[in-house]
Image (cartoon, rainbow, N blue to C red; front, top):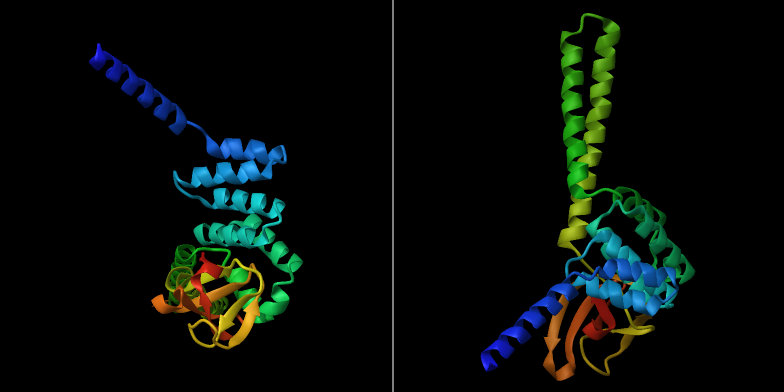
Length: 255
């Protein structure tokens, strides 16, 4: 009798687990968001992340956080959505919107060229840019072949100048591929999660504060130090205006 009871309880537990695993947390999050239950939407999306993340899911989570007026977490999730899919135009638009509304761009020191490069080039992944570069290179070879074998002067000129233009475009596409690859895999960025987070001259408590940053600011992490005598891990950060300082890990969240 005891063994049967244990078996029955085990089967019930398996059934409940299977039922729970079948819950569509993304759909529940979407319904909660539509009903303006944004806190519940965040909870459902966060649960969905346990089964794997995606760019649309991160985008939805960013929207829910924004509705809760948590702009730091909104920016963080938009950035993560773009890291998963640089072509997510909705995430890019909302990220720029939140940054402008938070006036983060005014404090970040980013210039027009940087915004243009990261905004335009970053719309595609490094693999896509590499494919474009290879395609343009093949077309350049076709232009050279046209120049060499064509009997018409007009076709020779077209092949010659076309090959030059295609060669330049191929180099630009290759440079874009390397740029995106570096900034998505080789460079570590983080979002400041605490408002007016201080950056010190060195990784020590009580050290001179170099500057502070508003929540939602994107910074580059170039070094880290586990200073056990100074409350744990510190990150050496660089802002887009080339300011450098040490900030506590607790104030940052890596993208």
